[in-house]
Image (cartoon, rainbow, N blue to C red; front, side, top):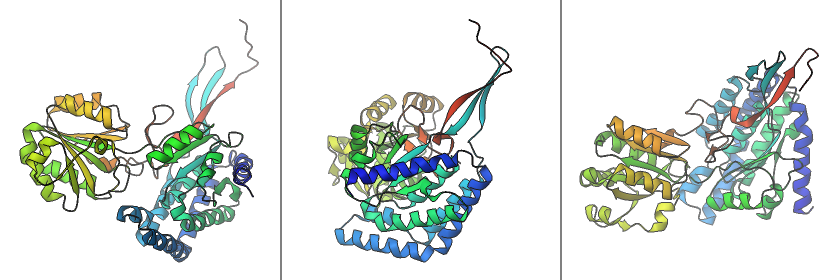
Length: 416
């Protein structure tokens, strides 16, 4: 079957099945989620076996350590997926929520949350996204078409089978979850043109993937753009706190979108702080501006491209700045409006930074790693939107709904 026809067929299957979700009660959807959690547990060894195939292929291809870390599914991460699905089952169902009531001329006007319909989620090789995206879409009443990265194809196929089995166990049409098993890159171009069947595309991945989707799509796109995340260490910063935050933001999981990529340091504390950063961030390659390389001899000089880069690795760009205004200007020029933060003891500096930085998430004396749907209490997230319309920041259940107006009258007529 040619790619175009293949994409049309799975998109149509998702669309046709999506109608069955509209009338489902929260109890039925929650039962399905718990069945999926049970299947994840019972199929644990099969999941790990499939993932091992992907992982070993990745090793042979010479994928980076950070990339392999994103690819890996061990018992701890499978436990995390199970807990995430259970947590989503425990959240209040947003579908049907009345978010506003008016009585303009006697009749009742309600604004009601409804599913978006069919969502295509395109992501790179993080197999846990398969579970998170499917669970969030199910709970919010949406069908989903999943297109994962080719490096995680075996993991994705098994995980999708687990999901579909859980749906069948609960009596739900398993076609509400579709997985693209074709790995040709051109398939993405056909998928994002299925505007007859798909209502929204959410791409999660690198800059090249996002640009390709935006350029090719005939469907609305919410961008999970690259995470060029910054921390600015102000002149009043608590040095010990700053070191702890920078270490956590850069080193805990360097290959994720909310990891720190650029460190900005006020000139008044740079000579004291930067040598301590070098000591603390063992194994991290620092790339600094001219003033940084004078303070820390022997490190690489940062290029212009380094400040635009999402390294997703143990590499950190560093720049010494003269003021908070210069830090904000740097973030505006080089950042991706994902997550940026300040470390400061000055209330005035903090408020100025918060009001000046135009990012989806702004942190104050806290790690950029906190920018996460689970941490924010949204359950799993389907992405972190760097757009400004419809959704911004971590996207949970409510961000996967739209609304409709319901007019409840008693023979009301329009006169004028």
